[in-house]
Length: 136
Image (cartoon, rainbow, N blue to C red):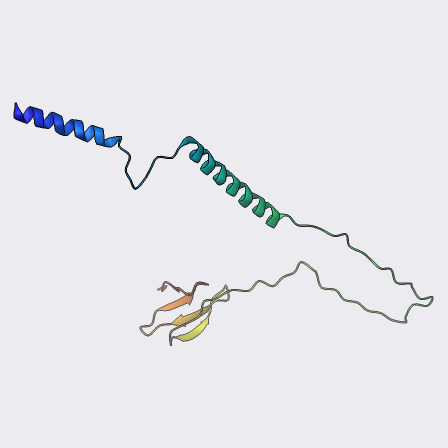
């Protein structure tokens, strides 16, 4: 009988302790919850507005000036223009931090290095070694 009473008392205290308010974390009142929610929404709106302002670009109209054409054009004029969209592609290579010997370049323009044991590799843009498989 004592065991039954002591176990009932332990269960009652256990379940009663679940709903107790602890001193470290007091429950928020409804007004505090609403204020916290409003502050979060305001912060989110400000962040979105800042992002929108950063991505918005303003364009200004281009002004052109017209030069008067002389009555007699110059005797000879030659102008050569390069295409505006032609850009040379460059291969970015990592920095070789070892004393390995540069042996040559591959088809993509990357430098091939030879290690101390005879293995050949190229460097990635991040500087990691990418070993080349030997062909027999």
